[in-house]
Amino acid sequence: MGCKYPYARIPTVDRNVSCVISTFGMPKAAQRHLIAEFAEEILNINNTPRHVFIEEAHEFVPQRVFGAMGKTFNAVSNLVVMGRNRGLGVTLINQRAATINKDVLTQLDTLLAFQNVSPQDRKALKDWVEYHAAEGDFEKFMKSLPSLPKGEGWIWSPEFLGIFERIKIRPRNTFHPDREKLGSKFQMPELDIVDVEAFIAEFGKEVVISKSSKETAKPVPVKKDDAEIIVLRNEYESRLLAKDVENRNLQAVIDNVQRAVGGVSVSALPAGIKSLKSDIISLWQGKLGDKSGAARIFKFLSENPGRKFSKTQIGLAVGLKSTTGSFNTYMSKLKSNKLIVKDGTDYKLNPDL
Image 1 (tube, rainbow, N blue to C red):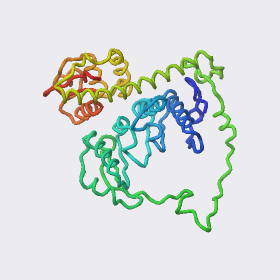
Image 2 (tube, rainbow, N blue to C red):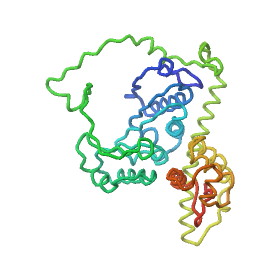
Image 3 (tube, rainbow, N blue to C red):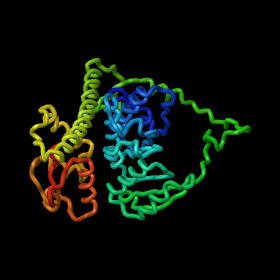
Image 4 (tube, helix red, strand yellow):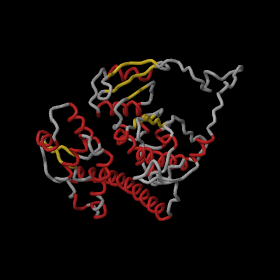
């Protein structure tokens, strides 16, 4: 793809063209590696408004993240969270909402929902609506999902578009070899022949572009040392995300023990877990983005661990009005990700993070 190393050219960006990258027939590991590298690079070098659609999203941001999946999950989730800072929009397409990671699903600001009969998937949609404090006829929305006709659905965009309505998708005008088209008289449509050889050739190159001379730099070989550093960085990020999941599972066990025996001191946690706290905080700050309201609140509370603050005090500290719906949305996002906890009427950094 030409996107294996930092600042490598991606022809879709260089030539400013739209394209479909098909991973059909590729092994799962190769698909995930390709998507991870592409997501990292397009976030790094994109310089114009662009929208990325990711089909079968559960393959790249699954509900459970293990081992080598950490790199792909991190790259795609960063694209979702921080893409707007680089002019990138992202749409995740999946048949089942329940199989997409909740942390990623809640970051999306617009929901397109079609026929859905699975209780688990409807619960995931319910969680999304509650997370965004979305206003609308929730009961009507939920009751209609199992029986929606083909091509009909709902669009719910409480912040970005400010709409909630039932919609109908018009029939396709373009060719698609599905059951509607296939039959005894099936004929492959004639396609215009376009010279794309030069464009395809660009995808086979692996080059590095200097930050300071991006327009005039010539391709140069990537040093072995640089490649090894990148591999080590990706491995570290994968292990860190996997450890975060492990820690959360461990905390759930500790919570059960606390309820059973009347409390266990956090100091009893293994030292190795406590030493990862600063890394986990840094990781979540990156996922939330530098300028979002949720990130500012999280940064303030992480800089004051153990101290409790009222919503009014938090709003004054970060320069936000604590009485607005947006502020409540930011707080809800942090609470749902277990980054902050409520203590009476006050809030503080989750001590078990």
